[in-house]
Picture 1 (tube, rainbow, N blue to C red):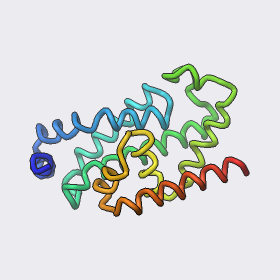
Picture 2: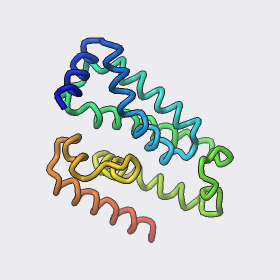
Picture 3: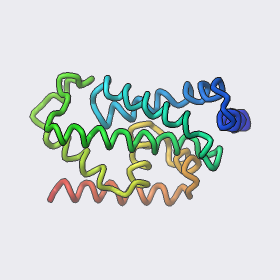
Length: 170
């Protein structure tokens, strides 16, 4: 952990090599998150690239070194949300580019509805669900990253998932 915090401090001072180490550590989780949300590997790579550029250019504004992972995931979350809005505005989902052929079914409208309802959740609830379900973090890890109580993370996730289920039934 000390080494990680040192890397973040060095990156905040403009050390590109330190930022590259941080990026290598978080890339797979960022990409998995983006692919799940967008279901388009090319778009996922684009938003992860944009996220990394934005994070590198604004890392000096990062208040707490311990918050790096949560901070970069929030940037990614916003980038994914903007991309989903672009899809909706065009009324065109990139179905032919889906990584998993199982998503090329008649349930595409339902999947879009789930994604749109997901974005209606409170930002912190979206982050908790995404970090757990899409990036594979445990409740304890999420609590550490977001500087929250582990029980609070579990209850927020539970309430948010129930809210999604109820909204899907409506």
